[in-house]
Image (cartoon, rainbow, N blue to C red):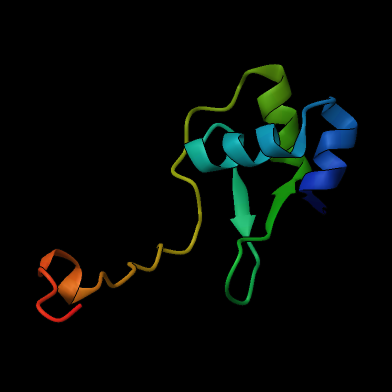
Length: 82
């Protein structure tokens, strides 16, 4: 069964921010189930039990690759008019 970050927060007492940080750094195995945009992490009960018992080795988080933002080309060009 998959748990949301809210359900993990209720079971552990961690804040939702801490739960998301644990997933991103790989200490808690999470799955990004979002369709697009902001990640929506879910965690299996087994992964949560392994984290709480200290048996889980560090893992690479399963997230979608971040999109790079395009920088403005003219950001370092001095203005001539105005």
